[in-house]
Length: 416
Image 1 (cartoon, rainbow, N blue to C red):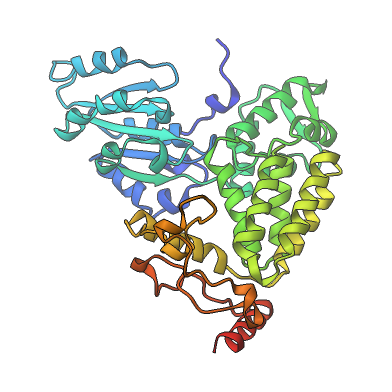
Image 2 (cartoon, helix red, strand yellow):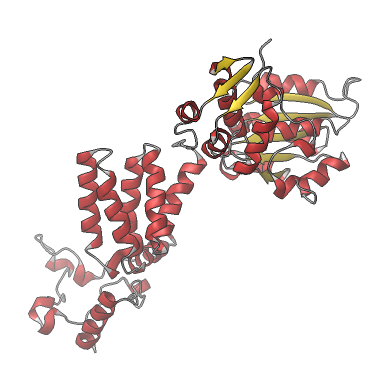
C-alpha cells in the first residue's frame, strides 16, 4: 500500500523531531512534560507541516492511556459519544488520550461534549489547529488546556529532513547543486510540503545506472509560490494586514512595501487597498490631511488598472504613508466620544442648536438664542455646543505636528 514519503519518515521519538526547539529542545517545557508520562490537556497551534500530529503520536507512546484519534473535518458528535461510551471499561482502565486534529472545525456543541470528561480526568485531549485557538476554540476548553505554539520550521531543519528522506529512497537520488537548499527555502517552513516536493521530483526524475537525477529547474517549477501561506480567512492573513498598518504607523517604508507585497502576492489586492485607506486617516490623519486624498487616488488607480500594474500606485501609497508625519488625534477623538455615548452620556441637544426651520419652532424656543458665527469677527463666537452632561469635555487634542500645531496656534489667538 502506498504511503507518502512524509509519512514513511515521520519521527517516532522526540529526538528525531525537526524544529520546535523552543518547546522540544533539551530544556523545552513540552519535552519535559512528555518524558514524565503525565500528559495534561493541550492545544497545539501552528501552521501545517510543522509537527503537531507527529508530536501527538510520540506522546501516545509515552502514556498508558488508550490512544484515539479524530479529525474534526469529518468527525461527528456520534464519534465523540462512541469514545466516551468506552470510558471506565476494561479496555480503558487508565482513561483515554484523544487527539483531535483541526479542532476549529468542531462546533460549540461538539466541543462542549468533551468538558465533563476533561474535568474528571477520564479523557485527556490533545487538539491541534492551524487557526488562533483564542478565536476558534471554545473558552471552556482553553481554560482546561495548555496552548503550545508550533512555529514554521527553519530552512536548516528542513534540509535535515530532506537528507533523512533521501536515505529512504530505493534508487540513489542525485541532486543538482542548490536543489535541497531551494526546496528548504521555498516550502515556507512546512516539512510535509518539502518532502512531497522531494518525492515528486524523485519519482519523475530521469534515471541512469540506478540513479535518479533531480535538476534545479525542475525543483523551481515544483515549488513555485509554495512558500506562500495565503488563506484569506486564516489567522496569518490578518497578521500580515496588521503588520502592514503597524509598519506604516512605525514609519518603516521598507517593511510597509514588504507586507504590501505579501498581500498582493497572495492575490488580495482589495484588503491592501482597504488597509491603506484606513491607515491614511487613522495613523497619518491631521498631520497630513491631504494624504487620504492621495491614497484614495492611488487606490482608485489600482482598482482600474488591476494587477500587476496596480502594485505601483499601491506601493506609492504605502511609502507616502510610511514617510508622512503621524497623528492619531482624529481616531482618539471619535473613539472617546463614542465611549461617552455608549456609557449613557447622550444628553439633549442644547435648545439654541436645535432645528428651527419649521413653523412653530420659535414657540418651542428652538434656535432663538443661537449666535451665527459668520456674523462675528474671525467667524467665531463663544457659545455652548455640547449637551450639558459633557459641556466641558475635550475630545479633540491637537497633535504635536506642524499642521496641527499651526491650527492650534490660530485658534488660541482667536479664542483667547
